[in-house]
Length: 292
Image (cartoon, rainbow, N blue to C red; front, side):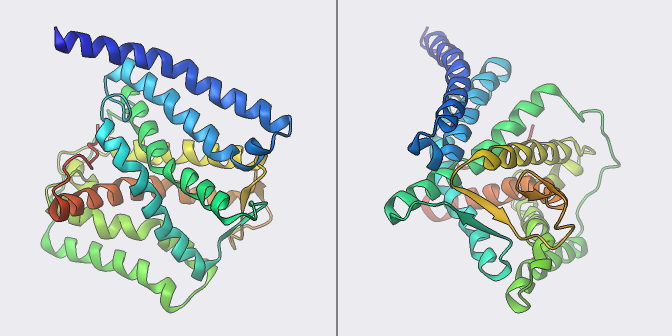
């Protein structure tokens, strides 16, 4: 009876989450158009919070797998982890200068509140989208010859990934952006595989690349939404991308959208690796993400 009662509570919560998430997005759009200051400044984190809540409700009802309702401990840890991991890319941007922020509040407390709120939505947004895509079974029929990672291949992947992530510090230039968005995949996924953690290589060993292509798709979906909502935001980011810089979609040079494809894989690999670190260092077990 306890399990049944708990399931009923979760179902009711999910039913509330769907209109609540949509309502937050629509209300934010209306308030932004109306010129309300709060929504001018915090438009991006508000709509992304609505998007995550909306998907969480759908994912629970559809798959009984969601971050907030079904994996609450993981979700709560994901928020600060998302902030910390995004600051890795902010650090790289100090050397590459690929994006900058405009129309931010002068008050630093308000500004950093906006930063933290926005950055906290990045990992949940990508991973909730991935969960939704697994429910569609898209790419499930995409099979490939099983591959087992050799020691030689392991070191090649890790070395190339490490070089990709180090070279921007040695020779800073905007042209290194592609290495930033791919290096952590090459570096960390083989390590996750060797640690018996969820990994793309682990799925490849079973002859499927469906999770990889679902992550690619999640990256493109979220990338489109990031840029779409950013275009209308008051406080926003703008890019300095050297590849086809004059052809834009929203605030993003069109070529830059390709970066969202590997970025979603980095979101997964980095989170899995951090989960292993937290397990070993602090005994925290709930930071993890299983591929569907």
